[in-house]
View (cartoon, rainbow, N blue to C red):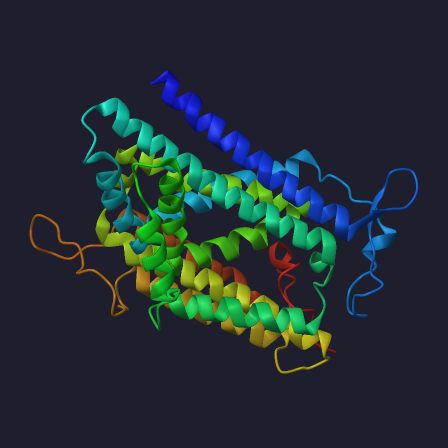
Length: 365
């Protein structure tokens, strides 16, 4: 067992070192040093919309920010486990990793290796995002109308997808090609098997990754690395501890998707508001914004109480007397939704709503 674990660590260490060396070469090409060892980014070839990042030194964010990013992303990873596609993929993957092994030790080794590769893949993706942010200053474009229009379209589409309007998926040939390379008897095959997780479960993982990267922005340039590491750590938990998936019944899977769908719609409103403000449009003023938030919260609350149903919902749960009932989790979410409505209503008459100061658009003139 110890020998197998050493081999896993050896593979991961050398693969990480090789990829990091590649990243360093990219940075060495894209970045230049100007004075006192400060790393700067040249913006000579960037459009006028980009902020002059070359005048700023890269700073490491406060540990508290990264700590918050870590725990929020870890929680997102736990939530992602209970989205339908990932939830269904877990037992099948565990079965494939263990079914042909004669000993429990070899089966556990396959699971640990698979989990380590998943962790590595998502963390490297976060590193790639960090490199893109560092070299383009993309995170400085929060008030650019093009960027806000792009993210509005992304989050609005994610919200509709979670609510069942359509399914996001990658080309089938990509999945087939990866599955063919996923030879579980070889280490490189195990890597391809781990790579199939975000591909096969794209409709569940992609929206969650976008949400994590948005919240990871508070962690600065390294926030996406920390966020993706924590997110993948949450996702691999049920592979190592299979009983984790029993925390929630299968009947709540679509309810998790719906809750995430409403969260994505709330975020899309914020980007639509930023888009309107950047172009001095007045179609989405503060009152209309609050009214839309109230409507979304009302629909979510009614859904959690079982008044509204969607086409992908499981049959309603029944008690010992064959009566339909609402679970405690649904009730708590409904209470939060209706309380949010009560909090928002005074804002229609000019109340400040201090808890949402950074989210609501400014009052109209």
